[in-house]
Length: 392
Ligand SMILES: Cc1ncc(COP(=O)(O)O)c(C=O)c1O
Image (cartoon, rainbow, N blue to C red; front, top):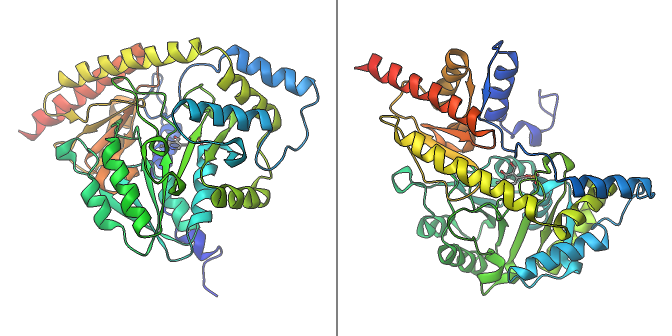
């Protein structure tokens, strides 16, 4: 018994710093707030996908589905992964409520309380809090800003031990946009296998790379039986609100995830699963158009940041984020983000939201109209020049 009104498990989860900034932005009364904090495409879901859900619902697809998802979707996911060289099988695909549920159920499946989960950071924070909810302990491996947060296999391998239950590798990375070197990731898989751990490859930004394709980790490793691939419709098809993701991996893991899925959500929203089938099997022109727009914005963001004195960013090779070093400005990244919000009407995510290694940075999302992105960066430019000038 403790004084806390809620469980220890929940007490171990830190409040999300991005959420804190969202709340401040909601309270901030500004006529022309520029939103560069959002991690979701600003495009509508492609029409044929919406139609598929509507048709399915009208046709009576409104019941529960099997825990692991409807067969056509499991087949579509497996086919897509096979086309990327993964030895995928529909029987070893589980459809989940977004990639986020796939990550959580996998962590619950492959870790025991007290195990460690190794996460190179800066990283999207949810796997860190999910690890705590699972009763395990996150081990952050801070990547170096001096290297543009490049993947450092040696450092990650050093953090893996017999206590490790899982390693979470996310490429392309949120928040840095880096696309990690796949042969270095393979070395991490080998090290994890030596210690009996799994590697969870979070590949929700897999389709969004601009300079070179990102191989699927499960396709290139010699030990695919220890790799769980997580992906979703959210970023690729502008479907964040539909909440459809999946995992593909070894049978013991997918069987266990299917089992515990009954206890969490039973199955994913049925019309949304039909929408996901249409997304994966329908025309890919909408995806190509969105990707081309993100690439144009990426190029413009990189060029615009180059014009701002004293700030630098890791080169975003994928996803839709620029992770900008603001360590020359006074205060913590949260304080910089708050000044940018209250004095310049721009919302950006503080780097500290992405683990200790993110401190001293702001994450700007370019999942917003190019004109709005430019307005936001113009204001950020003014802030940097004003504050650096004041510091002289
Ligand atoms: C790196 C990463 N993984 C997974 C997710 C989960 O996305 P969803 O649950 O919408 O599929 C996100 C969402 O922002 C993300 O950034």
